[in-house]
Length: 484
Ligand code: UDP
Image 1 (tube, rainbow, N blue to C red):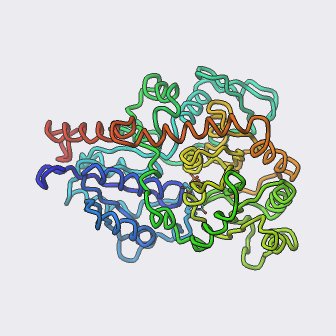
Image 2: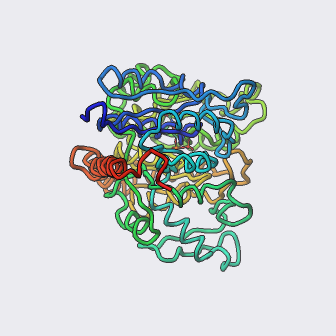
Image 3: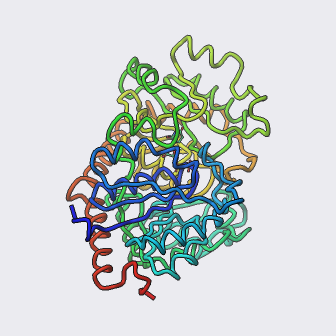
């Protein structure tokens, strides 16, 4: 480890909300484990969410800290609801500008790793001269798909929303339909803010992925798209003990012991884990179809019910069919978790043999790390691209047949019926392709584990970024405001 005088100091500025906050905390912990002094800049609510894990890391000798950015007196982050892990992607955090600026001027870290959704950050940081590294939470595959669509606009050359088109310039043949593209990709509305500029002017990007998972796409992202990218994931693998895994993100709605006990009573690979992440809202009608589909399949399941698309959630308890919960409890076929689930613990349990996922990038990668094949059910964000990676490039999953992109809080027209759910579950858990999918998934899990071990590709990329920052400091390109 470096001496105090030469020790590198990195700041990490996560965005609010599950899918962006959780991996950034792991990222900071990962760099602290490499001997860097890591400081996480949090808003007050977030600091409460992960202070326990930071304290555990500290007591094991890591130089990791929390700094709470207090909004100016009289102002509040009223639109931020990170307490329930569901802050919308376009939440405006700009009232933190002044506290961030003052902190950077005072401390002058060697680098600020900032989430791409803090769209105002370049204006503050670049004037001070702190090297800025961007974290946007996605993999290279989806970034390459996005780029291809932007350049070639294939969706404008088809006759309808359901007519497939091929993405040009990709290493594999990937087809999508216009209905699966975001409103931003379809150019129906402009992507808010300055994210693209923020990425272009940043010193580098850190990506939560690993080279061996998507080598052709990493090469494309770096060499064709011209990004300086450090692949340092899967970051979730830095959670090594039960407490870290159980408390990740939020307190679970179920105590982890009873969850594990339920799983212990099941045979290996017999349980399906069903979750749609931290943000998206499903309608009760959709949840009913999922419930019926799961009930008529031959497999046990853990169903996580997160946010529900209802204006008054508390007064609407009909989000599951009549008697469903009771039947599942009596037969021990299903465990229903309403609220936050200890996802890493569940996925890693040997009883879990499949994952129905909305293909959020964190969940997808966590599924890869656990070596479980997936039923892909993309809904929003870049999830339709991730589905293609899982089902057609990695070939460790089957599609449920989701066709409609909608924003996380928009009511969607499409309801995927129970027959489709049941058919996808049967194909995943007991179909002819199941053994091969399982084998490939296990192989990828092993590669993921090796990537973050000493000498692995992600380990080496983390070291390379640290070395690069040290060089910049030596050459005076570091934090002293003279890089411009
Ligand atoms: N997560 C969890 N328990 C839950 C729901 C989500 O631990 O009940 C975690 C999950 O492990 C992942 C993150 O929250 O790390 C969700 O991120 P993802 O990118 O998959 O989806 P998003 O929530 O951003 O749509």
